[in-house]
Structure formats: structure tokens, C-alpha cells
Amino acid sequence: MEKETLIEKAFEAKRKSYAPYSNFHVGAALLTKDGKIYQGANIENSSYSLTVCAERTAAFAAKLAGETKFQAIAITSDSNDFTPPCGACRQVLMEICGEDLEVILVKPDKESKSFKLRELLPYSFGSKQLNDV
Ligand code: THU
Image (cartoon, rainbow, N blue to C red; front, side, top):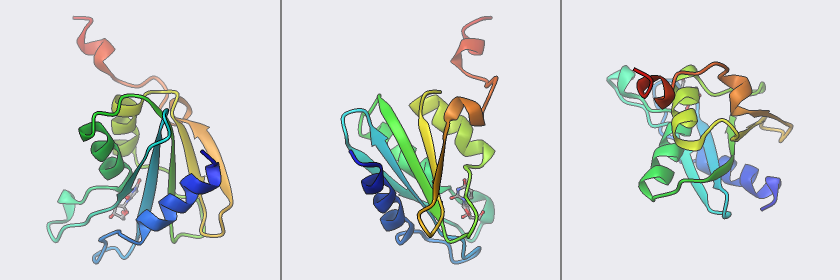
């Protein structure tokens, strides 16, 4: 899978965003180890706190489809700066995709930069804590 293809899928997902309140449209494309892509976009709600971010809609779709092994997620918005995942999404991605996930941030002009999820969420809380009581 070409990185460019994953990035294109994130741009395509952004066009499906439902963000009438913030007007901040975010797209995500999550790549499994065997090459499948799950798209996500932010879905807002008039009861603002019920909004779900693009990264989480992608991760939940993949999880519901039974996926267990992931390579990378590309994330983009209309901001001229990079759009890093919020703290809640980092925690959810850690749970569903694991610390080795490559997180590719993409500007509208397609400039990108990548991190490992463990760099974005160091010393994270997880099932290891729950299992150690
Ligand atoms: N948003 C995302 O989709 N992903 C993030 O990681 C940050 C924020 C969305 C939520 C909301 O719909 C809009 O961007 C403004 O916060």
C-alpha cells in the first residue's frame, strides 16, 4: 500500500465529515496490516459533547469489522497546519491499534509528518494496569 493512497483516502473521508457547528472538517484513513482501509470523519451533534472525532469513527469501524492488526492512520483537515489527534483519540487508538501504529499527519498541500503512537501518548494507561490489581 502506497502512503499516497492512504493519504488520498483521508482526503476523501474528510469530504464526508459532518461538521456544521465547528466547520472544521477532519478525515482519517486507517490501514490494517493486510492492506484494508477504514475511513473516518468527524460527526458533530447539536448537543456538542456528543461529537465524535474522525480518528475514532475510523477506529470503531475497523474494530467492528473484526480487525486486529494495524499499520498506520492518516489524518487531515482544512487547517494549514498539521492536525494531531486529540487526547481522547490517542487513548482510543492505543486501545484498538496499539503503540506501534504509525500516525501520519497531512496538511491540505499534502506535506506530511509521521509519529509512532507511542511518541504521541507516552506512559499510557491500558489493560495492563487493570490486570495488575
Ligand atoms: N476533531 C477530530 O475529528 N479529530 C481530532 O483529533 C480533533 C478534533 C474534530 C472534532 C470536532 O468536530 C472538530 O474537529 C472541532 O474540534
